[in-house]
Amino acid sequence: MNEVQYFINGQAGDRVSAAERALHYGDGLFETIRVRGGEPEYLARHMQRLNSGCEQLQFPPLDWALVREELLELAALGQDTVLKYILSRGVGGRGYRPAADRDVTRIASLHPLPHWPAGPQQHGVRTRICSTRLAAQPLLAGIKHLNRLEQVLARAEWDDDGIAEGLMLDQQERLIEGTMSNLFIVNGRELLTPELSGCGVAGVMRSVILDLAVSLGLPVRVAPVTLDDVRSAGELFVCNSLAGIWPVVSIESVREFSIGRMTRQLQVALEAGEDDNRGNWYRT
Amino acid sequence: MNEVQYFINGQAGDRVSAAERALHYGDGLFETIRVRGGEPEYLARHMQRLNSGCEQLQFPPLDWALVREELLELAALGQDTVLKYILSRGVGGRGYRPAADRDVTRIASLHPLPHWPAGPQQHGVRTRICSTRLAAQPLLAGIKHLNRLEQVLARAEWDDDGIAEGLMLDQQERLIEGTMSNLFIVNGRELLTPELSGCGVAGVMRSVILDLAVSLGLPVRVAPVTLDDVRSAGELFVCNSLAGIWPVVSIESVREFSIGRMTRQLQVALEAGEDDNRGNWYRT
Image (cartoon, rainbow over all chains, first blue to last red; front, side, top):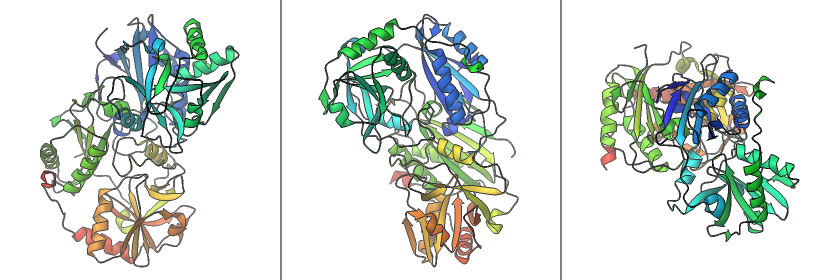
């Protein structure tokens, strides 16, 4: 599959209404799902986060059985692809006030897998610190909403294709996430990842790794992280649903890293791990 | 005119590409322009702010003469309407990185004037304080970008149609703006409006009023504003391009106001004022 295919409310088509609230206000949510062998990976977790986002943004009720059916059907159209799924609060006129009686619009797309010739999982990636700082907004923290200008500005900061990811700090100089990934630090035998109550996206792969670490008996801590923590860290890696785990081998102007044993252990466990899809979570 | 008419890149039509970056990331800007007698009011100021926004978001170059021509032509289709104008960074694939070679997409729409039966300009409006706090993000402050979830959440806080506007504080409890308006306080003979270096939209009507006050010889100050300033204020009003000046007669649970002399003076001056369109600012 080389072309991108779009589906609006389940129908093939690549046009949406110019009145979509996602277009006017970024009033919506999205998920980026890895499709493997025609099946959406970590479907239950993606749906759960989408559901949290809908609650946080006070979306009108959604038929989650239909969403699940749709995601399964779309995934089955390809073998190994990326399934992006946007929910917009629907069409609206001018004005911020959300109408309660509008239907949520579902905008799905299937994309080819990204091409990463450098073997980032095996050889690790080079990163940099972005100067764009994340604003603290507890009302939007954690969910994967469509107000993504901070990430756009951060990603526009570098052109060097040798830099795979930019790491972002908040305005208190705490390290939060990458522009498109979450991050983990290894300190001795402890795994540390930034807490995201003020900003940042609580990634699905982040939650998978947190659970994996617990099941491996590794001590895990979710807490504020500073650049000092990074300077004294043994290992650092970033993760997302498409990339899996990428060891970080350098942060420009900060330091270099070797790829460590815990990063490798988690990569192996992730590869071997069972997808923990609980297909009917939304009924409980 | 009762229907909303859409125009994509100058052509009538109400469908946009599902790959628009405005849809995926809120990666764009907008203006809401009052059309009076078939002419866009304060066109030069609207264009100037759009231009600032394009610079701040590092948009690809835009043909500003074409934009101006388009806005004039669209305004001429109606007599007294609202012209909303969205610029999206164009179509893109997945991924935050902005491609430099994509054309900006122009999404224009003509809307009926809002219906305000209560005569808000004359009789004033009731307001409330929103619990949604604005996050500080200097990189996005002032411009009218499409990341508007804070405003959506704030506007969703109340249903009472008798409340015309919600006032928003930042996380340091400074009063910044209304969900869809800027605000001014009158203290004695001094006019005070919040400074917007951390958050808020620098409205076109706000700039008109600031200039008007100067030309009337009124002392003006742009500075941080607190609820204490509001409690001790003589007058308070909100403003935007469609509403003009709305005197505030109450802030729920905070205090009531009488409509004051300076508010009336500014309303009269605004009505009488010449539109200061300098049609060719973009060439200089």
